[in-house]
Image (cartoon, rainbow, N blue to C red; front, side, top):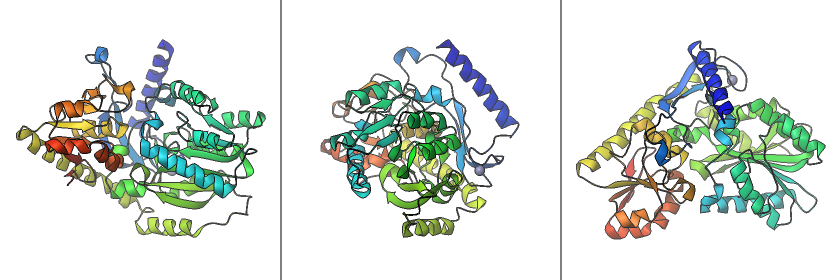
Length: 431
Ligand SMILES: [Zn+2]
């Protein structure tokens, strides 16, 4: 344990030296990073929920200063804390969201049909979490292998019958899998690409583990939506990169993988799912959807630096609007509670300076978080039953991407006249 801490401090110092000397370099192409995308100030790690015993202890805060590369336009966050530190004990269990499970089950139906997967195939998921997705392949009799570095969530996956390799994925792990005869017909990576500290090693690993005729699909939030809808709260220390189609295409091309199809999907506030194949596998032509989305991104100016550097002002204005709304409600002595304790909520609350003076408490369905406090802001997290007990006047929905599901679950709160607030793109009270 003490070893890990020493390592982190050393890495942190290295990071600081880097940024003061302005020699930080692009994660992908290594060009120097000189342009700010948005600076959200200092923030604690968004998944490090605080226990009651830790409340009056020091808490580490790190910069949330996002840069954009002038050469490849990769939007990225300098890495201050090692991925080992962030992901070895992870509080996020994918299976707590019903809509995410439905999304995963639909995907498995679609892709196993499209590729004709069967008992001779192998589906591999990178960052397989608690087996939320691979379980649906298991139900169909399709062999699976999850790769997941967090021991606690991997254990849950194993209990569901999802065989899991407890490791970080990269070229080394991929070579070991090949040596074990575990080459993949399908590689799935959902919301993992952004969290990869060495993107070239990760993408190189996909090339290694993918069978010659196999495909990989990766889902991640679309940078265009982040920018157009002010989703600045999806920026956190655990997300090192933020992708457009035009940039991600370059990254995979550099590793011999061709992006041949793309779906736009509603998850996480607007994501894209990209389909990749080996450059040698010419049986899969480039779909018109790829050409169309590429054109839309160019039209939106994603190949010009000023499009990126203009984003910050929009974020500041969104903060002002949220604070204005909350100040008004608190002046009228309204009780405001939160719903959810997601990572994005922690970026938002820390950046806006919202503590128990505005938000009395929040609730979450994940029992791991009950009795703990949000990092930085120290807002207490209770079970959902606290809502009908306290009957707040307003409920701020922190995981706004799930707002329809949450409003449905909390329909009973309308009985005492409670109203719902979403914080972005601009704070508003739902009708
Ligand atoms: Zn770059």
